[in-house]
Image (cartoon, rainbow, N blue to C red):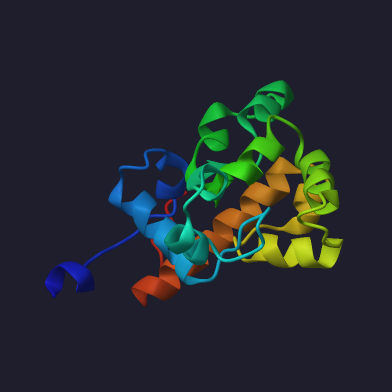
Length: 169
């Protein structure tokens, strides 16, 4: 159809995507699930958790990767903190463990939890399934994380659309 053929996506859009009701926001979330995004706590695919979710701890929602409280303490622009680049789908259990702490702190706690029990390499694999740079997260380096993930998401969108992204920023 012409609407699909003529569709465009502008790179600046990622910085303004904040509403879960937005079609683009939902579409990007679906692309991440389709790519095999895995939960930080349960380690299984988000898709499987959505299908099999019958308890509150496995319910899936979109949460901050660098928590809002941490971003505020670091003076990070709230518009960057709250845009989709800094959000991903994870379980309620993972989100509660993250709290408002720095990624370096919550990753260590997640990995050492009796239920999770994984090494840095396995956690890096889980983070990569969300197109997240594990090294930047472990260094609490928001700027490197943001640039890296933004580019990865733009590449994902370009592949899904079968065309180049309009680079307008």
